[in-house]
Image (cartoon, rainbow, N blue to C red; front, side, top):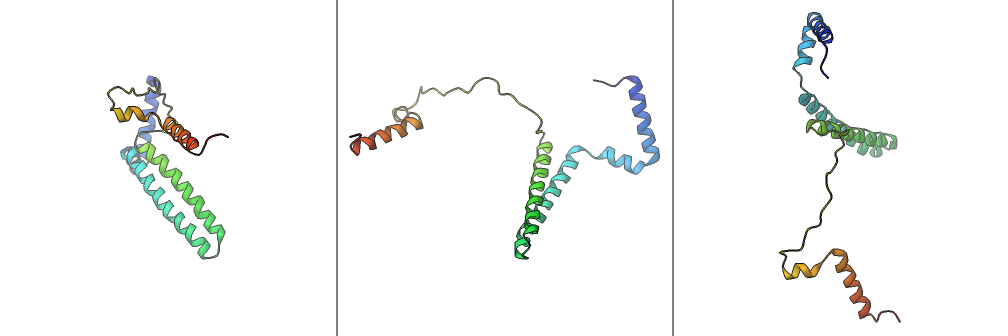
Length: 141
C-alpha cells in the first residue's frame, strides 16, 4: 500500500533532518544494500564457526568440558546465522511457504526396454527375491 501525501512529506522531512544531523551516517545507511549486509553477516558466521570449533576442540584438551560445550553452542549459533544469511542472500526466506501444484505423477513404462519392464519397482523385486529364497529353503513346513 503506497504512502499518503502527508506520510510521504513526513518521511522526506525525517530524511532531510537525518542528513543535516549526521551526514556520514545517512550516506552509509543509504549506500548499503541488503546483499552487502548479508555477505558481511555470512562472513561473520564463518568466523564464529571457526572460533566455536577452536573452543570445542580446546575445551577438552585444557580439561575444561564447559568450554567445549560453549564451543558447540557457538558453532550452532554460527550455523543458524550463516544459514539465515545465505537464504536471504539468495532470495529464499524461511518464512515463505510454497505450495506444490498438482500431484506427483508416476512415470509410464512405455518405450522402456524388455529388461526395464521386467524389473518393476524396488519393492516388487525385493518381494520376488524373498519368495525365491523362501522356496529354496523349503518354505513353510
